[in-house]
Image 1 (cartoon, helix red, strand yellow):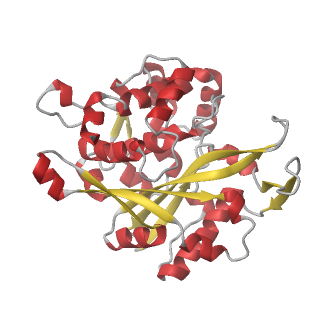
Image 2 (cartoon, rainbow, N blue to C red):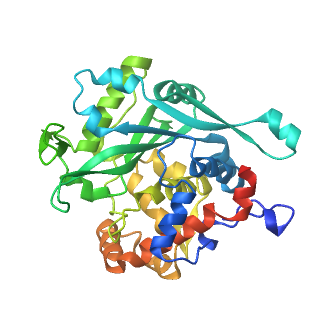
Length: 355
């Protein structure tokens, strides 16, 4: 699937899989920082670039139906609150819209940044029957205790994917954590004690921490909007391969955009890996097959990953096979995915459209 052709090669956006930055891991991460890939600001450059990618690379239905929002949440703040609903009700989000006036004046597509309440935004786009992709930046996602002299927090990002189920006539939400099935073990949140920062306070959840907090978010959403969103943790949570299985550098920030690209380019277009056909993402969503939707993101990174997917994607134990494959590749695929993303977002054809 190629991005739309422009009038000259300078303005032609290369596809993700044709892009590559020739740098080592440390300099790649630095370049990613310069591109705002690690930023928790709602109007960061990567968020902006994701909208240019939508207009330039997505298939017709993906371009029309998909909406990208970015928001942020602090787990360390959330667990200490008695009234959870008020916290969620006040969450903000950012998104980009076409700026018709500036586009007309400057002769090229321009965008304006909008900031609004997260719940108001989701509800607004639900009324328009959009498929809503939320990048949720999580501050203080987990606490490192054994690997550091004193406890320290680590940040992360989750994705919430809302789509309208045509059978049930309701919206369904899918929760995506790049750690996939490895996230099942996290039932305890460790809060650093403010009075004694060398110790932690444990908050235990019956559900996985991610699931418990997102379920609370959906309860608050229903009270705020009157809209019930379906979410079955077993069916609508990504428990596929740990996409960071070979990652020793903490590059969770690459996956929101990689998954966004795969979702939009193949939204209504079937994906072919060699001779094997993977159903389009809209179809996988309707079938609640979130694991295949997310895992298919990795299929085209190298000729060897293509061969692996072509030979094994149909197998019942594919998730475990992919998990082991990623571990065996160690940092090789981590570096390659980062190279592709940095090369893709940082290409001149995208940068010139931003300014």
